[in-house]
Length: 100
Length: 488
Image 1 (spheres, rainbow over the protein chains, first blue to last red):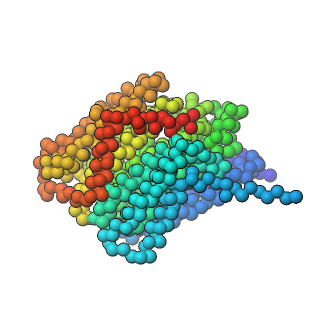
Image 2: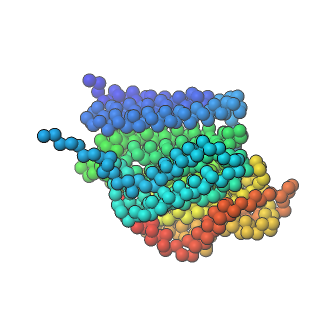
Image 3: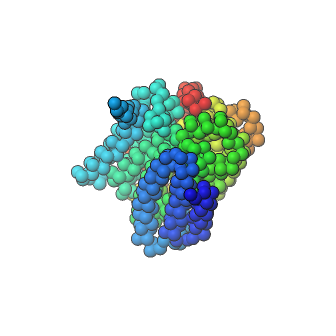
């Protein structure tokens, strides 16, 4: 039986890696992958607490989150692909028409 | 003998879901109708969207007095839901009217445009009606995903695309925070239902519980992004500037109101006991949001961008109302959001009329002399500007008065002083627009106004409401006060 704290520490580490990835990487695809890491860290918390609290709710929520994440991928990749068609780059710091 | 389980689905009170069902049906109809190709200038999709929004508004108005909880209490139909549903349907209808001609001029007149607008509206309604963190999350994503696409709808347009990318990346980033916050709150309390959460807190106080505190903090960060509170506002000016103007109008009003609706319900239903934890955080956010929004708005030359910063500042005023809390605070937040919706849709609505086919004229200098060439448009824009600035006898003034008086009654004197000072600063940049309208000579080709009946109808409606609520606000205020009773 894995203790709850281990799962929580793992999920916190994954979440922080995701946040740092969003903040320091410049490639839109990599930023997007980091966001997915954050969502999966949240899933891990849900599952861990679901086990710990003996409540099935947390596991059900994970399905909702996975569905939402899949929808987000569809929209996000479409936007990034469209950007690549127009600009031939996916680097966010090269996309800088709007300022002020 | 076996007892059959109660057929839960059949027991659902479908009337309470009426608005969402009507919108879903409208979305499917819009997409199905595309099998019969329409002409480029067809009004079919816009009419279907308008009728759908009317049906949704009617279905919720029809059962406005009933209080119902469905899906095990995850979705509630009470005064609060009714108020916001009507607000979102009205904002959606005004946005459809403003889009009518604008989408033809920018060549994005497609059924998907209206279908996405309706699904964003459905997401907002779900956010306002949710009584569970998971349904709030689902509503938020339904709204956000539709808005990401709408912002980037002019897909051959670099600005629109860039706006969509920035909005999407930061919006998804914020969703990550929000979800992690929900997960931690679930861990701390063992439930995601707002009512159950409040019940749990009676037995085991959560004040100072680190897991709960961190979860609540992440939740506030997530909502802060959605209502564009400083320091989570970076996406707002870019997304508002690059998006099609009709969509900017809609999201500046709808997404913000939906964010505040969900935030209010969470804070008042579930977090009443831990007020001491979140009041300082939200007060700080309110001060930062107002000040940074107003001061940055002073420096803008692009009207869309200026209104984006102004909308950030307005989020700050609503945050004051949220901090004030209680019946008065919540009611004044609803009151402010309804008035803000009308005047901001009007201000962006004037912008949707400017420019020829595929031409965007939204710099403040483009307005030069417009007040004399098109007096009606000039007067309308002036009215929206003084209302946004909070000058009587407009609705914007009444909105600020009620928010500040609710805050004074709650003893928040410093917040009110900072809010009033900010309102004074804000008048400078709103009046700059008026100065351009009446006191400047146009340089180069004067801006062309593309008159269109639906847009004009939307503007007239906004003007009338802005004036009416400026003079006779009691009806709206009473409605707002009735609506928040269910939260307390």
